[in-house]
Amino acid sequence: MKLFIVPTPIGNLEDITLRAISTLKNVDLILAEDTRTSGKLLKHFEISTPMHSHHMHNEHKTLEGILKKLKNGTQIALISDAGTPAISDPGFLLTRACIEQQIPVECLPGATAFIPALVNSGLPNDRFIFEGFLPIKKGRQTRLKLLAQEQRTIVLYESPHKLLKTLGQICEIFGEERQVSISRELTKLFEETKRGTAKDVLDYYTTTPAKGEIVIVISGR
Image (cartoon, rainbow, N blue to C red; front, side, top):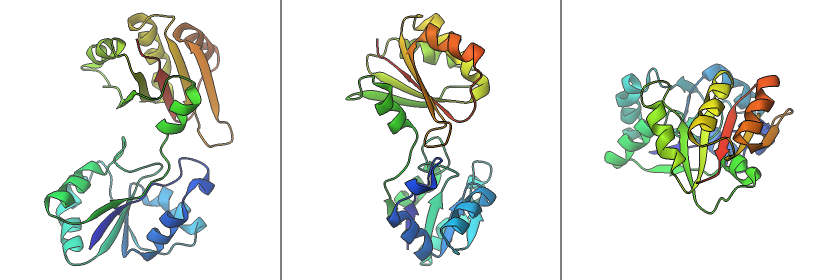
């Protein structure tokens, strides 16, 4: 019995590792965030392992059943739609439960969006803080005010329809001259990284609406 945490490509399918393909072929069951999305990936790499749905809306309900399968000797791989499970995606709950019940867990290295965005930003990356998604409403301003005092480089995830709001708040709370790097559509055909002051980047995306998954990297204080 073992749970394998398997990263999947964030865009370019060539970013999957040979070990990930081998693991997905050899386990008994794959837990997928969206079986339709993951089905395309498995078909591309000729992986015929059965899939079950495992996402943020059902992970509490399905947890006991998954643990029972693992205890009965089932080898299970957990994947998300893109990137490494449990990084702003489902995975933490199951991983913690396995550890608590002494079920072996093995996490494979692989794709995740914030590392290439951080390195590509040109901002200091020897020390950084990863915040994932900001609170939607309650606590958002408080979190940003705390981050504005952070001396390490800050990494955030954001959705396209909230980007202008977030950049506006960065200008207001961090200051318009704070250095910012926006990476979007990483590894895909229209990959883009825009660097500059918070005001410059806000002005750019005000006239050039952003699409795709977005990583915001902000210089420390």
